[in-house]
Length: 189
Image 1 (tube, rainbow, N blue to C red):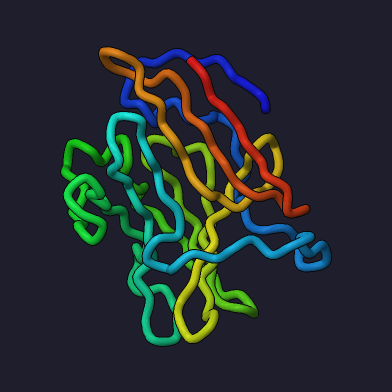
Image 2: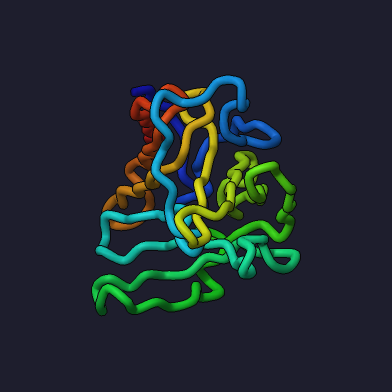
């Protein structure tokens, strides 16, 4: 696990890494992973958890019946308000956009096995996140990829540890690398 130093002057997630690929993407098809990473439902491709409560920000892809991403901005962010109940969801508030919202540009690409949507979080504009969307077991599934420790990895979760009274103590990126091993990266203040 590698640690990086950064200073906090804005909203918590604006501290996420300044290095990034243009597109993250999964490993090339000629180098399959040791075990395929588990896919998530397309409406919850990845999420951010925080130390302040159980609520989570989820990122999903709006798809049609063929699992094709819909519209110019198919990826959307929303709250899973777990403190109110497992099925309770709410939209992001306007003031939460700089920390958890998405950049306006979303590029959709056709792949042999489905679709890929290239996105950036507003607080993390330098780092690409690629969401692969495909049909699996009669439903639309997704995998989200970004760089962790300099390698493409499937995102399992992003955890933000809040500092008291405000700010961020660290951000932990957790995922699975192309070899099937766990990858973690800590970004510390």
